[in-house]
Length: 638
Image (cartoon, rainbow, N blue to C red; front, side, top):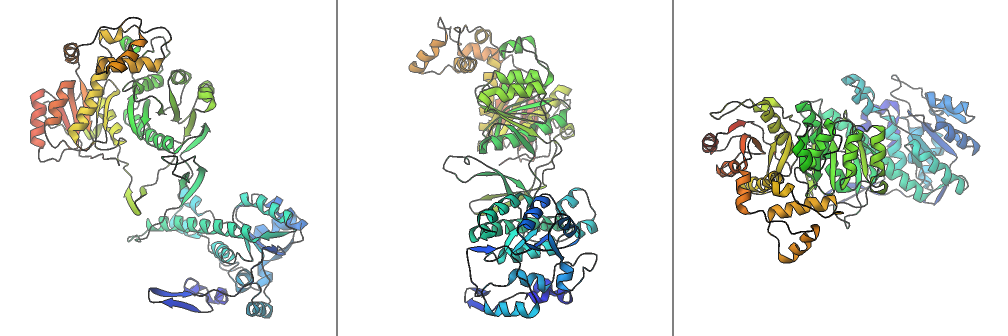
């Protein structure tokens, strides 16, 4: 009972319970029965207990309570501040007759406090006991908690973190929230204006609906707080508990989830850590954000591995392209339609990323590892894109991007120092899954184990293999990626068969390379044909499998019908493709993937190894003059 909150009984605090009776059945343990109480809508705030660590907003609240003649119980610095504001304040120690003890660890843990919080109004027995023991009814509690998470974030030692675990605060919050029929609990300065408004509109009273809402918020807070303590403590012991809790806080509601009928939807921070980015412009949606966080991790890791600016073009949680900031040749500038554009290293990275598969990149979400400069913004200005995430934006660049799409273009400023939690949790079909985050950094050391007769990997080949491997790390599995000259040139995602990934991505490689064919470069478009329409028309020209109705529409892009690109011409041109790298997120189970990859100029291979067919695959690489590294790192992504 609350009597056990007397300092004499504190060792037993965690096992003490209160009840007027028990209810049980054959299905489980006994439960407490309800206590008789009078529930009224409006409760006048006559006595308030205020004890806060964070004193933000206290001045306005204190003046308001003083104007209403509220008697305030308080402690320490809070009491001193409230007296300065003209409030009638009684120290809790004076009220309880018990001083603060144990270096302040025990201040409010007393039956005269918790009795005033938990007593059922209108219950004759409770009313009599309160009178007998000199207990005041406490109508309002304003409490916030010791900054435990901040102590952990600052690297506090075990003893410091332990000392920042609040005991009295959560006890008062839970007691007040439980007795929401009579007590109003405030746990955050952001709630104070709503409290003052409610009291002003109800003659100094709070309503039952308001008290219940605040109680729900209070339990969410204590749950989150306990979750943070539990997670930290689990990392400090040799036998972590089986029960694990993760607190999600909705930071901003979303229009809907994956689909319009999936409501409600929201973006949440985890464990009180805040968000890894700031929304600068636009209104991001659920899938936008999935693309953004995956794309940002990709470019952040790629820049670390290569020491070059990196860019990614994402669609539906997989990269359509990714690249590093290597200068473009004159021919590439023509093919990618940026002949007269200023191209910094960052701009070059995005041009390359976008041009791996420019048809799929239509409406992409962009990630840039470095500050976005004006040159990069000017490239983005001419592309159809939904948004961007980057660690910073030059002033001119930001103004260009904020004006894009009539102000609807999404701009997210990433925090490069944000520490992603080590463990990941997800729910699927009512089941919870937990795993360590895939934080393995793919760097050049992963390419040291070359298992083929050719053992040399040129520097550019290493960069391309790192690029391809990091790109598929953030691609839906099974996945395979081809790269050349610092850019992805084909990504095969989400196939059940590995060779199908190789073929799917290989088709994209062929399309990319054939864009350099003289006939494709020479396509003479009508004036006024839009940029993306030119991109799509070139791809369909290369593929060449148009139905008559589609071809009729396609021909409208030109003044004269282009001469077809024959199968023989395509095959001949593809033989000129060489020096391509390929990476696989898991081992090649058969040599068929290598047999197909050689048709696309592959000379460098990275894969985890570990298949019973490793010798067969190595033999195929030796036959085709390829160098292959076993990375010993599987990169499945689901």
